[in-house]
Image (cartoon, rainbow, N blue to C red):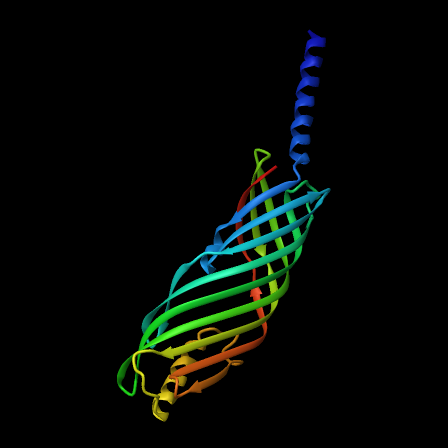
Length: 241
């Protein structure tokens, strides 16, 4: 009987070690971050593990999403799409294989464009404004997060705190399409004021935007170039192989 108990104990211990070896042998994880859809991007992530650290990458594929902003106290409908790339080096502070608390410096690139239509007034007359926006940003940051492994295969990756700084360029254009005659000086001034009020809703760029008005083409263009802080947070779900 004693020998049988010893044999059962050894088999159980070997099973535990084998299960642990299976979990620790997984080197690749493929994940999806649903929050990318908010900005018009399908975010697919990969993690390649070696030892206690990993190389990570994210590719954001453009998908069209709809958002509504306020222009002259009315709804302006926008369609947005984004392409992005991120690469990072992940160090697991927990000393566990692809699990636990980690610190991850990263590099990222984002290109986003948007198109929209809004209604307003110039000199008391109703007008239709077509909007286009183009953003490019190149940045670096550091992510503090935690990753869980469920049943040694399913992955939940939480991005807790991720401050970043980006070198950014943003170009916004508004064109009045409801008339064909040039703006008067009064209309041009009103259009510039309306666009400035719209841009002021974005706190990091509102004091650093150059505004140009083309009366003949009924167009207002704003341009921003400079450092833009950001914050990465969210969650991704995936499978480990």
